[in-house]
Length: 177
Image 1: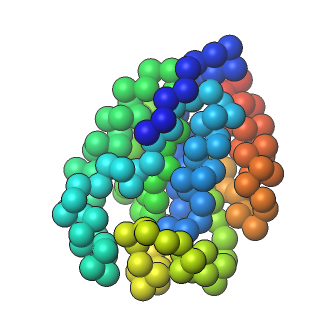
Image 2 (image 1 turned 90 degrees about the vertical axis):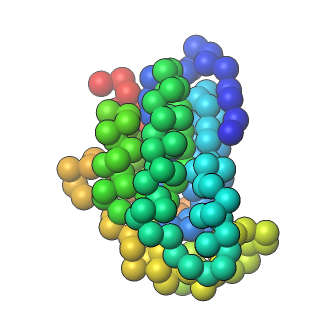
């Protein structure tokens, strides 16, 4: 978890950067938080050891495994009174709804891309507890945000700096309203 002082560019904005494993959530989330002068947390840091061990063994988590994890994420984000950014897969609508219950007004940024590209990225990652063998379950579980969730969808084929510019412009427009 990184904290960044709230300077003049800071705004009250809570953002969930979501997508399947390997979509760039941690990279984009951290850079977005810096650009918006908000604190950042990666959801992976909130997993209890049992969840990490289960995933490392190639076993997908159940919803029962995820509820306490999602509650901890929601509590952290809600505690960021001036706003914050969290990177979390939040693949199902019910997971995003649980986070929104903790943080009304939560903005969703969905990092979207072709499964083959994301799977290749995931396979190239070193020292990550999510094995490439679980990528099919990630895509099978993914429920893209519905129109009523008003998510900002970014195509991850663009370079990270372009994605950050797109996201900050859209989020600042939304926050100004």
